[in-house]
Image 1: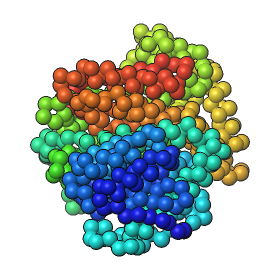
Image 2: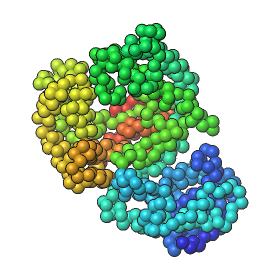
Image 3: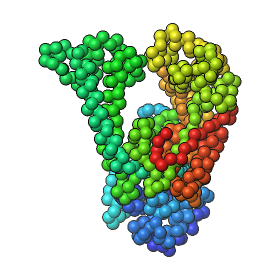
Image 4: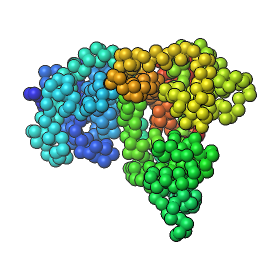
Length: 588
């Protein structure tokens, strides 16, 4: 691939180059940096390419104080323009560096990385690096040896050419991808994903504030609790170890499934095949040692996943945590998060209160109420299901009244809990046997409860059956926005077929929920322009915004309006409800 490129190092050359670039509606876009983190490195090059393999390579190092340098204004105008499409591979990276180092929000993005993920539709063997995507879509090999070269020193011709090629290849790559997106009817969900890139980079750059003192106080409590629980658990399990009577209390490895399981069996606990949480949970009420074991494991996991290591992610420059969110973290479209995983911070207030508004600012905590169940009601078109949400009453209590044959007013807390588990279990294709394990009832009782449940929601039953049949027949599932999942279902493997049915039924529900959140992020991003509000975290169906205290009431309304509007764009038959709270800290 031959590329014609010009290296730009002065204001006049940049002005002329940008005048030429303004004529094009589609531009390849790439950056070269000295680090992977914009807080740790420098933006060295910005490359913009047009048709016919022509590229302008701007040396940002030649423009001191780039973020405020007026000579770079023509470049900012090009990047911000909604007239031209900027094509980038993993656009979150390029737009994040441009935002942080140039002070510009990139407009009208086409992300070939996200497009590749959408087109692959969950196929596990597909890879999405630029080199692999270029081979797959246009049969072109890219030499990536210069990627790890020194971008801080005087640039070689090979480096500049490499940078130019990465931008130029975006043009033919997008052309092929657009064809495939149209063919697979993925255009709507692609637009949704592309429009979500900028809100996510804004959130990552802002970061979230973690109170170190509160976190350390919580860790001290958890460490003491872990020692106490370990000692009590050793006492309880000791009687189930053969050598205990000879040598006093026998110490076992509490993290060994085999040793713990053997000890429990010797104590007369009817152990399942494994000691996984969901299999042990039904035994906790009757066997205190099981309850103690589950509590110990929960504390142990907290210390391992959310201990002192979290503090290492606080940036010295900002005093905040800037996590990395992967926009399509699962085939359903749900996001994932790491460095650290803020989406798995324990729900308890003792952990979440450590994340707070900085310098007296407030947090707006907003989450969708039962969004997956509302989506399921919309999909199934079940009158009773829809009516339960339209009434505004307690949905789980209504379900319990139907399943147990009593009035909603007489539903007990335990009956409501059963109904809640059943409602959410249906979303994940739960069967009677699994429901029995989760709740501790007999399989026959679980079957009777599920029979009454589907007797109440008959269209829901029909929808789930038809959806399962269609999954097996077509081996494709889609969200309401058109996001696609391809399934490979082996013939005559009934266990694999049942698993695929459950996954295929759940994917459109969970995926539509993810799509609604992403649409909400874009609407919210647009709505808080010019305010003190900043998006700081998202957890599946929850959004957290930080704002000045004097704007909190108004921002809360903007957040709620954006989230409801996003839901109403996609879910048409069921009202969307958002619970909003203004608080000093991230706690329920």
